[in-house]
Amino acid sequence: MTKVYSRLVMILTTIFTVIPALAWADDETAEAVVENTISAGDTSFVLIAAALVMLMTLPGLALFYGGLSRKKNVLSTIMYSFFAMIVISIQWALYGYSLSFGPDVHHIIGSLDWIGLKNVGLDPNPDYSATIPHNAFMVFQMMFAVITPALISGAFAERMRFPAFLAFLVLWATFIYDPVAHWVWGVNGWLRNLGALDFAGGTVVHIISGVSGLVACIVLGKRKGHGSVPMLPHSLPFTVMGAALLWFGWFGFNAGSALGANGLAASAFVATHLATAAAALSWVVTEWIHHGKPTTLGAASGAVAGLVAITPACGFVEPMSAIIIGLIAGAACYLAVGVLKAKLRYDDSLDAFGVHGVGGTWGALATGLFATTAVNPAGSDGLFYGNPEQVVIQLIAIASSWAVAIVGTYIILKVVNVFIKLRATDEEQESGLDITQHGEDAYTDFVLSASMNSGFSGLKESSTVVKPMM
Amino acid sequence: MTKIECILRPGKLEDVKEAVNKYGIHGMTVTQVIGCGLQKGRTEVYRGAEYSINLLPKIKLEMVIPDEDVAEVLKIITNVARTGEIGDGKIFTYKIDNAIRIRTGEKGDEAI
Image 1 (cartoon, one colour):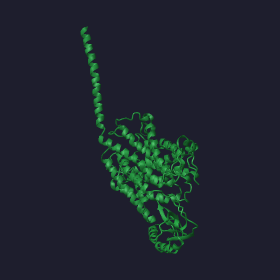
Image 2 (spheres, each protein chain N blue to C red):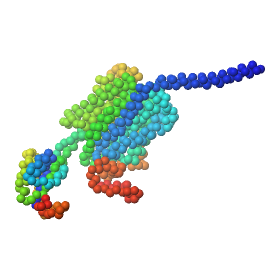
Image 3 (cartoon, chains in turn orange, brown):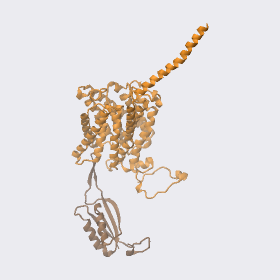
Image 4 (cartoon, rainbow over the protein chains, first blue to last red):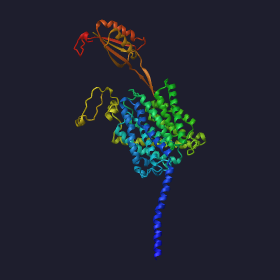
């Protein structure tokens, strides 16, 4: 009996000491595996790329658009980009990332399983990026979600009221950006399953922002005085600075989309740079022939057009193809902005559609023409490499992004307008949105006399209603 | 006393200032202005959209001088500011009632 007991005790002790030890061993091997899969090089590259993409919105896009607007609207134009950064960063963490990249629901949208970044931790998510922490991927994608609605603001700048902008911003990100990002990039998204190629966001970022911009500028109507009052860019040096920062940040956008410090990233980097240079060249040459002068604004605009066009293609095409894509993008966007816009008479204030809608559409199509598996084995061959089907797939992706942008933006704007008026009144536009929406003036050099309203009495007396100066 | 008000090409300001200084006139007020006259505007192009800029930048120079100097100063300004092309500007003269130096209270020619 005692023998049996002692045996039992021995067995139990062994079990209770060995099992945890085994469990430890299990943990250790699991940790070792995780440590091995996270690559320091890839992680640092993607985090730096995320910071570069952040720079594109602020100050890049803010300066680019701010310089193109008139003096009295520069701050309101900058605030559109600033608030896209502020609001969408939070929206993305709360539920935007989950809707875009969370576990698939019927190939249309991500589920809310990752709401509040639940399950988005330090371990990699091999579905998207096996070598970097999941939250590095999340924050990189966050910067894309931020810049996309900021791009739209170029179309309605100088006339959309700030409260209406905020409502539009959140609704648009939720109902348009997040689903489309899921279609194209989410695991089991229907366009991804179809085989649509979009390396860094030609459809997701540029087509839907540009097309939504076109819809927005038509729904809001022309700016007061459009066509009779001169509406010239107030600071082209700002615009050039902004364009240069966009170009710089775009290396993070495009090369960073390789999600690793590798050959594909280098290839995307080279393609991005070449297409941009080519597009700036072709925009300037086209306008030189058409109008007789090579302009600085043309060079800046052409560069951005090239960046837009190469975005979906940069991870799939060879350097010489990138140059061709850029050359066509510069001329096409110039014609869209300089000729088409004048003919169709819509008031796309800062040419969000002309550059992003047209450039993005060309880029998405060009990806179907020039893509080659020689550059990226994970991609497909395009028409020029013997696969005409890819063009059809790209056209489906283009058509569906156009459709969702047109219908979705129209509905969102109409709904917002019921609750919050979208369009600044004629008087507000004449005084400028800086004073009427934000109560400040970018260039205070003409304020010769002002009295300080101090403390609480100031709050009472200086009611923030600003009357138009007419 | 006479007030001389001239509209000049912006590039001619320094020459005119130097010439009247040399003659002995030191007080003047200069303003950046825009305006139009015989000179046609210019065309600017932004992203393929042409704008005719009709009001061109000019310099307005004002000075008040003793009557006996007027003829000579007008001659100097006309000579120095002239290029012979359209857009050289104009000179206007006005009779002035009085001038007062705020610091001392001096009046008339002494104040200018």
